[in-house]
Length: 121
Image (cartoon, rainbow, N blue to C red; front, side, top):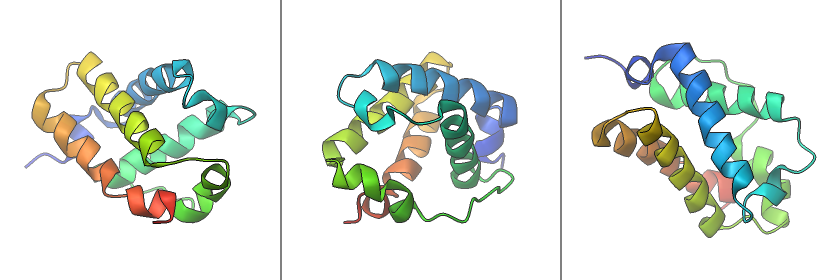
């Protein structure tokens, strides 16, 4: 069975997916403030590496735990509503890339599994 990583198009597919997703995220007035002042090229690389990990691709972990990586955003008000909006933008980017419902559900489901860690719940 093909791994989710390859179903998403491997490295090239993830690059395109992350680019499309962040276009949506940065256009969202509820999410944009959490990314103000960040190096977005670095942010793209981090999220692409994260997607590699959760999709079964080559693992390039940064060693930073999700909770620690998002603690400042949580202190600034990052909530479940924001997390859900982020996941929704990922789903929309997957649909835009032509992925079917199974791939969208699986990918967003794996991201949803990290909610407690990201938000420190």
